[in-house]
Length: 201
Image 1: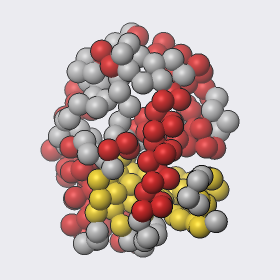
Image 2: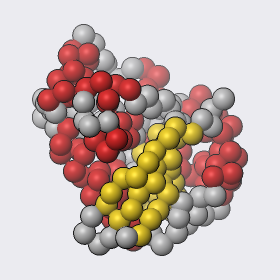
Image 3: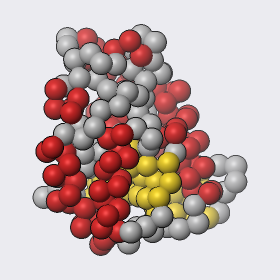
Image 4: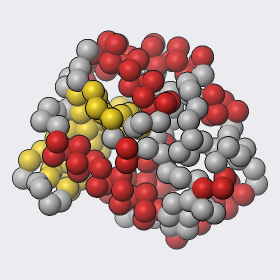
């Protein structure tokens, strides 16, 4: 089987992050703070040896990828199915008292928000897209600029036995980076290892 190194990067702080509003698959640009922080940490990505920058089509992830790539000057590509999970009817809403109950139900049972994606739906589309990225991009390592729930769910499924405690143990701050080693062929992808890479300190 082939092997690749992937760096999953959560986007910088967005305007809706700052306002504590659920974004899901709606667009919100980076806040001034998010843009400034992305510019501050961007030079540190040079040390990771990244050879290609893949990103979600959502504006906050795309902006983050472009800011980082100003330092790297690498080929880029856009991948629809690494966009954030759909929160259905809750998108555009502030996180109120339902949020903790949702997280318990989602992490433990995979229950979707009203009109949104289940945990299994999110995991399957993201895993399939990451597999596509590995099969279609020759270079390695690959930086994948995406979203908090995308990263938490795929790492939780791959490395924590998909338990509520496991999902909650994966902290994904804005501009948080996880190094993931995978092996793959045309039909499947297998996770090998992961670790958090602290570029924010």
